[in-house]
Image (cartoon, rainbow, N blue to C red; front, side, top):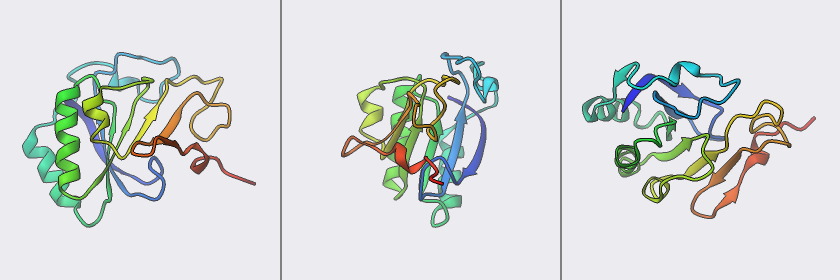
Length: 150
């Protein structure tokens, strides 16, 4: 599993400060994608267990969630990393363009964003979006948290 970057995210998981890992190798290649640089596999740096643990330890007490932008195409490794994060007290989230994911990954998630990018439908902040932001344990859709009211 390779990552393009690691950054702090404040809006992708409402109410959480997330350590965000952007994983390369996305095969969906949605038209209008905001991150086409993530399409090519093995670009960026290899996300080793040592690097991952260093990041988790560095942000412990500052960040509350670990967010993966992609990576579901590496289900065993992703599930392993999500479980590590949960064991360290982090909540977990995956943003995917898929509509369903591997059950092993799913059981290690707090939240899941599904659905491909379709410009005409908009993103999570649109009432017409095909995308869903779900609290996994209760299977509750939380898209309303992204829609700004006037």
